[in-house]
Amino acid sequence: MAARYAVSVDAGEHDRDGCPISVNLDEDLGFESVKLVDTKNGDTIPAQLEGKTLSWILNNLKAHNQSNYTLSEGSIESTTHVSFNEREDAIDIRIGHRDFTTFRYAMDQHRPYFFPVLGPEGRQITRGETSGESADHVHHRSLYVAYGEVNHVDVWAEGKNSGRILHQKFTEKSDGPIVGRIHTNNKWVNADGDKLMSDIQNFRVYGLPETGQIIDLDLTLIADSGDVFFGDTKEGGIITVRVNPQMNASASGTIENSFGGINEGETWGKRAAWCDYSGFVDGTHMGVAVLDHIKNPRYPTYWHVRNYGLMGTNIFGSGTFEGDKNRDGSYTLKQSEQMNFRFRVYIHSGSATDANIKTKYHDFINPPTVTVS
Image (cartoon, rainbow, N blue to C red; front, side, top):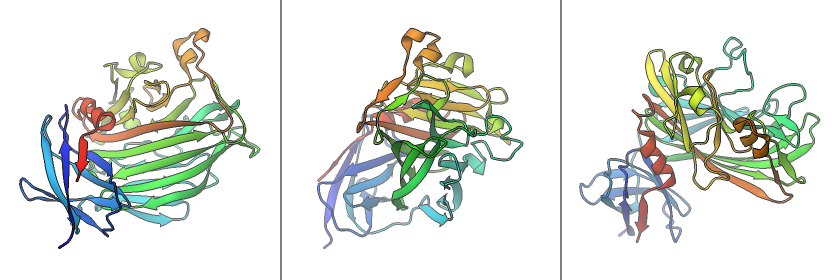
């Protein structure tokens, strides 16, 4: 008889629905594929096992309740399987039978980025790349990592003197029934190609419905070519989204942050645990939130967020945002040191209130408790 394990999940203080779960097991079970069976109703739930990491999507568990499962070798088809299609300098990502996004990493770009990113009903939630749409701020390329002053080099804009973030290699590319992983190493350089520093951008794309899609980023900045100075400037988003122009707050959209600030006047240069941008695209109401993890440096981050469609995190721009040189936020990462960040991008239907971003934030920072025996 195949080995079976008991898995228990405690929701804690929040309802859980569409909540990614990952737990590290004590041993490599040696299973080629796995399934979870709910001991209460007998439902079989898709799961994914990679080495010692077990992942699945937790649905319909109310606060202060518990779900129990048996874990065994086997398989069940996932309707939201994450699949990759690799082509030159790009990876197309599908969730089930629908297109979701493309990760682009060509060396002639200024940085790696995701475009397009598709939300509910297949609507494009981030800004396109046509000359008409991108006439302003051409460097705001959909979903990406960048910063405006790194050793006095602008690695934010795309001018002739701007720096670049150059893809070096993948350390992991794996799709699956629950989560797809794109782990990359990148080199930050100046306009002459001289190295400034390195980074690690580890992305996880979860198999979720288009009304509640998640991309997680674990980002590490590495001072491996001497000290790295991050200047106090507004020009940056350590993680950045530029939304579809139809969603701009100057059009149909609304910006909202975790303190209830609305639109640019109440969110730009303000600190918050999360920020959300929602609006209508071709009649479909949808939004995208960026969540700042409680363990990130200088939490909660400042936000560079504009009514014209930009939303990004920026922990170094405090003096600029506060209008006070005495609050200079610049920082020097010393040789051989690292700085680590975790972010979640949550794509959803409706407004921040409709999507219950407050609870989704706790899925991120206060996940359910899981035990395996």
